[in-house]
Length: 89
Image 1: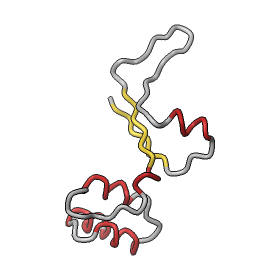
Image 2 (image 1 turned 180 degrees about the vertical axis):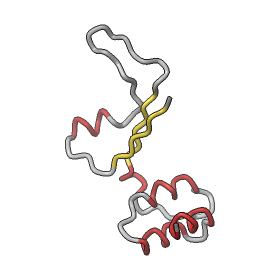
Image 3 (image 1 turned 30 degrees about the vertical axis):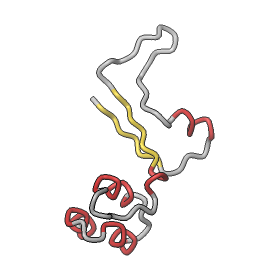
């Protein structure tokens, strides 16, 4: 199982450092961890302002999650057909 965390605002600098990479669920006392669970954290702030240029479809999708208006979403997706469908939905 993969859990994906999308972070847009991180207020605590310690959390920021901790969330920069993938991590696992672990019991700190026994050091046992769940092998079948992977947790990925994506810092959406890194994708703010990215617009579709014909080669960055997935980065564009993440950038859409940072938009603050439909107009901004439309600007981000440009001529990406799948993106246009999401904006209209």
